[in-house]
Length: 267
Image 1 (cartoon, rainbow, N blue to C red):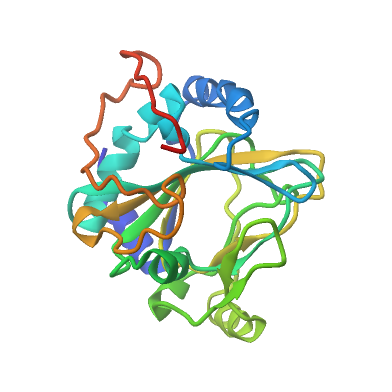
Image 2 (cartoon, rainbow, N blue to C red):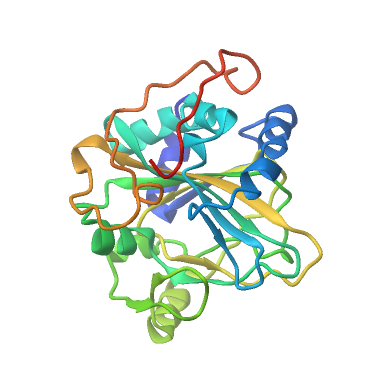
């Protein structure tokens, strides 16, 4: 699958592209069906909120067959290769959750801010492709973007180790105020199967989920192969060391195909 010229231009200009129905209801149903077993894991790859609710399941493609297939789906891999201009590998692959009532904040940040500082990723030749697994509405902590903020490059950030259960390089309020005055804030809502593609320097975050509706989304963080990380201080289930170019499977790979036996997340 390739983006149209208009879609590619929108992504380049705004820093993100929303696709309302990239995956079908049948495809997202099989992805959701695998989540209870994933969230029941007790290893360090499952990061929990202070309440105990799952915040992030890292490296899901290494221990779940259906997510291994998704990590090689042509509707994700081919646009990533197109946008980044070459073969890509999986830098991160995770499910982020906002549990009903207990889903905590994600502070304002840039993903490349973390990837460059913690992993020594040389250049911002990386991007995120996210797929909604539940309905995302204005009440359940939707992802918020500051349009065109990716054009500012990597912004200075502080390492927040206290606000939530997960450390993050966050951007100060004064800078956010300036960026929002220039670009505003958007929060794309949609049904399961909708997708978001966004630049690794786009400033984003999300508010706590106070609603009775949880929301989960899977994130494929693609990095160009010639831009592989240089530092390996974070666990491999967070920042992967396998720089092998991803080869797309068939378009129907979530519904048919040979089962893949995924390895252990902590290997």
